[in-house]
Amino acid sequence: MQAVASSPIASIPTNGSAPITGSAPAMVANRLLVVDDEPEICEFIRDVAEAVGYEVAVSHDHRQFRSLYEEFKPSAIMLDLRMPKGDGVELLRYLADLVCQADIFLASGVDTRTLNTAMRLATAHGLRMREALRKPFILPDLRAALRRTLNLNMSITEQDLEEAIRANDLFLHYQPKVSLVAGETPSIDAVEALLRWEHTVYGELPPDKFIPIAEASGLIVPLTDLVLRNALEQWQIWHNGGHDIPVAVNLPACLLTDLEFPDRLSDLLTHHDVDPSQLILEVTESGAMMDGPMAMDILTRLRLKGVELSIDDFGTGYSALVQLYRLPFSELKIDKSFVMEMDRSEEAKTIVRSIIDLAYNLDMNVCAEGVETVVIMDLLRSMGCDKAQGFYFSPPVPGKDVHKLLVDAEQLGTATSL
Ligand code: C2E
Ligand code: CA
Ligand code: CA
Image (tube, rainbow, N blue to C red):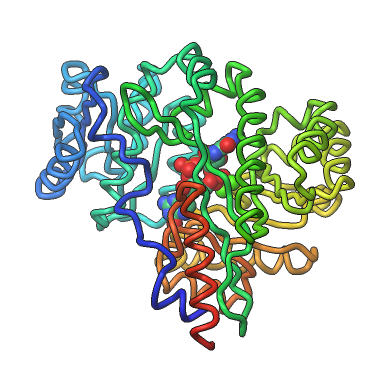
C-alpha cells in the first residue's frame, strides 16, 4: 500500500463538493450571519465566505445578533457555541422559536461530543443544522463546508428534475474502493457510482442538492433504475476493455418496500449480461434497519440472486446488533464523519476501531470512507480495516477515466513491493 501512500492514484480535489460556485447565478441570496465574540475570527470567516460567494454580516454578541437576524435575513448562520455573554444553545432555542429556515453551522473549540450533542439537540428543535466545525478552523474544511451549503437547491423543483431525467442531464462518476489488505500491493477492489446533474443554469450539482427532492417526490424510483442501467452499461465497457470491476450503486430505502425490485434487477442484470456478483448495493444503515419482514424479504432475495449488499454510513443510525447479524450484508462502510476525525479525536478513533472489530466478528468486510490523508490510511491499516475510499486515493471520476486509474494502480502494484 506504500505505493499508494506516496503517490495517490489521482490528485486530491480542493474541496469536497462539485464546482458549483463559478457557474451559479445569484438567483437566491446567499447571506451568512456570523456570530462570534472574537473579531479576528469573524473577519477570517468573512474573507472565506465572501470568496465563496456569500454576502456576510457579523455580530459579536447575542443582542446585536437578534436585531441583525431580523434585518439581514440570513440564508445561513455560523454560530459560536461558547461566548462570554449567553451561550449558543440559548440562541438555537431562540431561532427554533422563530422557525428559522437558515442553514446553521456550529463552530466551537469545545470537544466533538459536546458539539455533536448541540447539533442533535438543535435538529430535534427542527432547525436546519448543516455541519459542526471544530476550532481552530482548517481553511479548506471551512471553505468546503460553506460551498456545500450555498443556496442553490431552493429554486430546483421536482419538474426540473423530471425534465433532467428525460433530457439525460444526469450522469455518474465513479470512485474507487481500494483494498488495504496488509502485505498486499494496492488494488482497486470496486468502484462506487455517484450521481451528478449537469444543470443548464447552475452547472454540475452534487447529489445532496437533488436526491432529497427525488426521494420526496417518488422520482427516486425511475432515477435509481437509470443509475443501475448506466452503471451496468459502464461495467460492460470496462469488461470489454479487459477489466472486471465490481460496481456499487446506492439503493434508496424506499426500494426495500418494492417487492418487485429483485426481479426487475435480475432482468436488468440479464439484459446487460452482468454477473450479479459484480453488483454491490449500498443501503444506508437507517434504511437497512427499517422494521418489517418486507425489507428482510427483499434483501434476502437480492442476496440469493448473488448481488453483494453493503451497509452505508455505518455509525450514524441506531442499529440493533441482533438485527445487523440477521441481515444478509457482506460489508459495513464506516461513515466518513468518524473516519475524517480520526487523527484529531480519540473518540472517533475508538468508534472506528469498534466498528472494524464488529465487522470482523460478524464475518463482514469493512470499508472506511472519507480517507483524505496518508495518516488516516495508515491508522486504518493498523486497525485491520479491509478497504478504504476517499480523496486520498481518488475523487469520483467519469467512467472513461476509471480505466486509467485501474492501469495506474496495476502499474503501482507491479513496480513496488511492500
Ligand atoms: P455516500 O453514498 O456516502 O457517498 C460518498 C460521498 O462521499 C460522495 O459524495 C463522495 O464524493 C464523498 N467522498 C468520497 N471520498 C471523500 C473524502 O475523502 N472526503 C470527503 N469530504 N468526501 C468524500 P457525493 O458524490 O456528493 O454523494 C453524496 C451522497 O449522495 C452519497 O453519499 C449518497 O448517499 C447520495 N448518492 C449519490 N449517488 C446516489 C445515487 O445514485 N442514488 C442515491 N439514492 N443516492 C446517491
Ligand atoms: Ca454509498
Ligand atoms: Ca457513505
